[in-house]
Image (cartoon, rainbow, N blue to C red):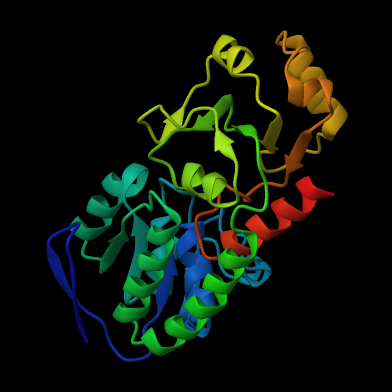
Length: 267
């Protein structure tokens, strides 16, 4: 089977029953969901969804690969994403690997698009159709179930939030929350603490980085140290701590995570 990738402007040949390497957690999730898991021979160190991903050989990080391991696996296709992985995709392609970058989603609908694109490359569209029905039902269940202004923060070695052009903004709006940075035409934002104070969110969603074991009281102390004592979410203990790879994960498992967030906030 031949597949043309618009990002690299190249056509690649994919054999039947291909050996697959995924360098992005979202793609690893998709490969599992569309029934291509047995073909996955390697993943990145950040691919932890599904749980079975931890049993696959690790061939590198998000921006670097260990070529000795990659050569040993001899994959027929390597899936990457655009954005930060663009240079790695070009590097792999120039070294002769069959690389297929998938665009980063800017909405929940982009996650569906990515699933169908990958399924199309691997002749798994029928499975993707069935999965999409399940996910549409999940999204329907959580639509507008919450209300209020929300501040989202993730620890990426420093505080980062999401702007209007992020799938996270779309996800928050889908469940009924108003992102305080919804008018910032960016994907990711380094939040101005004074603006957060001014916007006075009623809910705060704080996503931990991998390996962190902070609890709600730890995060509340962090916010008080920033001078956020008078923010409604802090005063009313409406701070919700998310495990790593919750909203930061843009594979189809995000749809289930949204359901978990709604349950958490509603109590």
